[in-house]
Image (cartoon, rainbow, N blue to C red; front, side, top):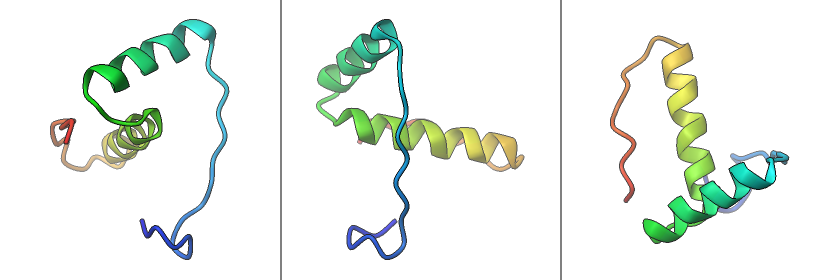
Length: 60
């Protein structure tokens, strides 16, 4: 992805209060950022849509 921003784009999403709370719970439980969880979920969704390998959603 690149932390310098040259190979990345920004996306903004709106979640329901319940979705936001659940995402925060999962992030806190696994000691990761909510944005990290969102990126992992998007990667998994794209892989599935492309028929690619469905690797486990590892929390590390």
